[in-house]
Image (cartoon, rainbow, N blue to C red; front, side):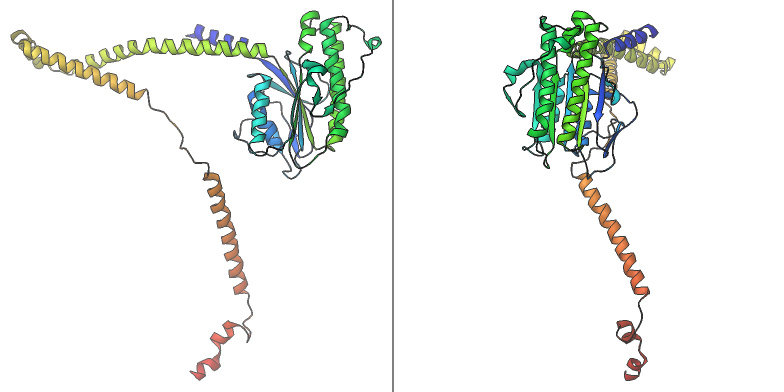
Length: 395
């Protein structure tokens, strides 16, 4: 049992995909604190909560707090960096990220969450790896990246395909930052800008993550993120949430395959063990019942079995019925669940109506009682008229 437990822990550690979730900028109304790990599948809840949307899963992550619900961010800018586990970003608040789904799945979930309320939101996803020709006329308008100055490069080279593709993505980031202040017109709608960078992983694979070329690529990427940071803050006057996270899709697929195999194996083992356990429990119950039978009954049953085949058949039938009852009881026991009570979607609305109506009613009644108790019984008041001596004399 101990070996099985150790193997399970080892397999779980091996398939756990880790990443980084970095908050580059957040307004004063949204605070990020602590260092608690967050799952990537929950990022849609975190980002939707920052925009003022209702969170469907409450109490799932304690790293975010809303201090002012009337000055929430007008937009969210997300930079997804594919193919790497961690990112050396010198600025921002960093949280460990459990990568349990691909980047596009997170984007689709967040987009659907915003489209449920309004269809007029600006929802932009730009995959920089597609290049300028594939992007064409983007949602921010025509992008015109500046040519790459090859003399400023130390280790990267435009003659290599991996380096050239990554440098083009960096230049597109600079072009987006240059276009954002003039193309964006803030309004009351919540906006999302989702930028995907996929050219960093080929650099790491070709040169190594600790090489001079990789360090130069990281430096260029950090500079581009700083430019994006300043541009969107200027466009939204600081009321914008800017985050970045890493995502390695290969590890996500590996986690899913290992999890599915483990679930299939556990299911097959459970199915194989259930008949054996049922037989053992049936035999133990039968032995317990047999020990409660007296010796006289045992002798009589033996004599009856020797004298009559009909009585033997009846006993076999009784044993079969007992075994059937044991099987049915064990099956029913396995189907007992400790489920919580289900509430309808209108429960919180009705609860708030009754709660605040009761509060207002109690305080209103208290105020009326205080006002009546302090009322001056002058001649113009009904209290004076009802308690006047003249009224009593007239009667």
